[in-house]
Image (cartoon, rainbow, N blue to C red; front, side, top):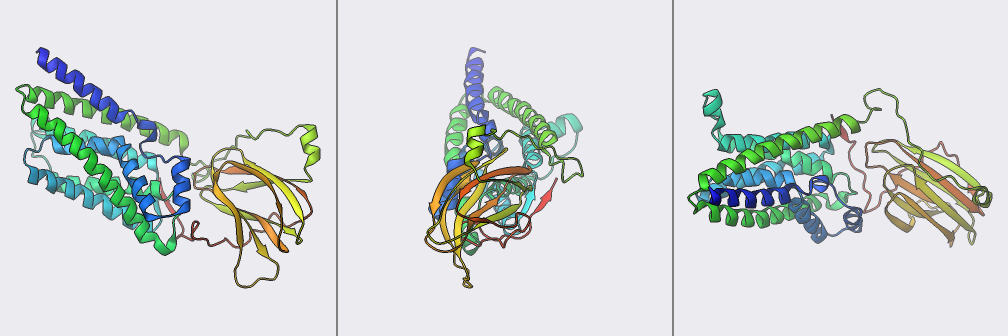
Length: 380
């Protein structure tokens, strides 16, 4: 009994560590987003690997798969089925810009953790007196769902249309590297406990914990879905929280113009100033909530080749600075909103320039970092 208790405590520490990254399981930091913008397939591999190693639900699912397998060839077979499943949907969904609400897909992934543990405990026969579905087919099918989650997260970043397939493949290679690394540790743990007499009790406790953890994650994901679903897509009224810091009277007097630009969910807008050669203007913009991709650039007057010069691009919620132009033309900003929220930008400018029509959106810039992708289809 003492041996079982010690093993259960050790198991609890392992699984708590596995789920500790709940808030970051699929999310990507702003530093990672900046790496994506700068490009490079090796960096996609790195982000894929770190993304998988922090993906608590994917890791829990893999842990559940290897738990009931005793032969190495069976482990390879089932893990391969899972890999093929998530690779197919990752590639197809990203290529076709299909996005599934990530709270919903994560809720299904949480249920898949419950399913794999329930199967391992022979729950279908014990509680329903039926034969369990073919495990290999189920793992492949659940892998397809996991791939949708990976694709939806990947599409939140700017992707290069000229190298899109290699970007996706590199990201997936990173996912596999992370999966293999985690798998090696899991196999070592399972092999260690399999030699113990108390392994049956350990197995039962582990899979019971996976069911509870999966159910908890399902509830949390559904709670997140209910509170973050885009009400505008459902025909409701959108309320934008105004948390932009108000300028004091002195600061207001320093700005020549203040413009408000509304950026719809997953939308894009561009605003330019007419500026003469050698003129100087200063600017400051800030969102009311959320981070945007932006490209601050200029286009020469009368140019018909599509040439433009980028001065700065990044993922940010605010930016400021000044510019002395080297050519006459339009100078300004392109913003891309990758979130499901309506975002309001407050833009302050002063200097030597002429305002353009705020209601008129100019043609989207096609850069290597910010491509033209198919119209996104969102499934709630």
